[in-house]
Image: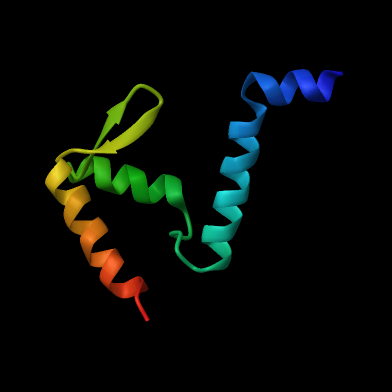
Length: 75
């Protein structure tokens, strides 16, 4: 019962986040120390803090990186 209650109250999100993190790390698509990378980006004003998370400062940067990564995933 506790497992069901935990999963229904946000546990699925945490579980899916862990799975995504492992897949990205296994594929080599994560920086070695993500926290340090985000701090570096905040200092250089690429990212900004929003609540407990981090966002790109400008949507154009995010859109550009998304386009560039689409081109590298083809093949």
